[in-house]
Image (tube, rainbow, N blue to C red; front, top):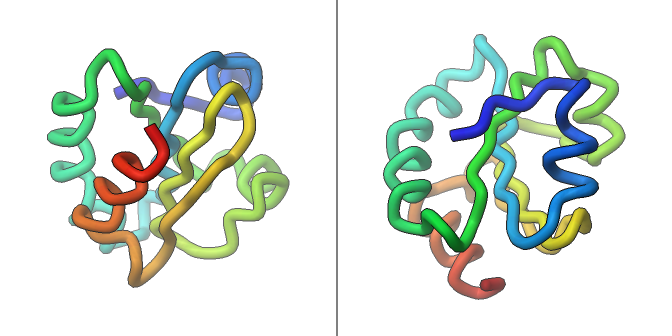
Length: 105
């Protein structure tokens, strides 16, 4: 998985081509940590189709707010730099994340 920060987000996500999934998390988010291994498994399954990345919102609060990330965990799917779908909070299950990917790619 690609680690993002406020300096690389624009280049990798907003100026990227194809599909990029961003896993927004923070160090204190227990559900985020629980979801991480499953998201890493999905990254292997969709390798070559979707670029999986993660952004720690602790050091990038303004960036998260600019992307309308209002709660964690949030996983957003971008296509050619435009957010096309996302799952957040209680809906951020591995099943819903995979369904979102399948629906859009």
